[in-house]
Amino acid sequence: MAGAIALLVRNTLRSEFRRIDPASARIVLLDMAPRVLGTFSENLSQAAKERLEKLGVEVRLGHGVDQIDQDGVIVGGSALRARR
Image (cartoon, rainbow, N blue to C red):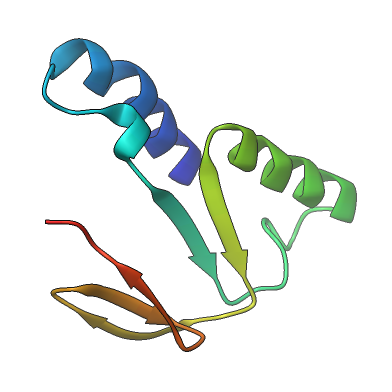
């Protein structure tokens, strides 16, 4: 899903919405698991992670979301702030 959102932001938003700067979008994939697609082989898991990163997705693994509020989320004690 994160990869699909990255493609949407980079391609569709650019042509459909002139006031939205796709470069300013930040897509973060959060997962408590130690790797992406944990049921797949390690090679496929690593390849998927690298592909997501090439699409501009920031991958953060091994931490769950501690708190969600109107300002963003707290993950592993670090704040990820949402822009309004």
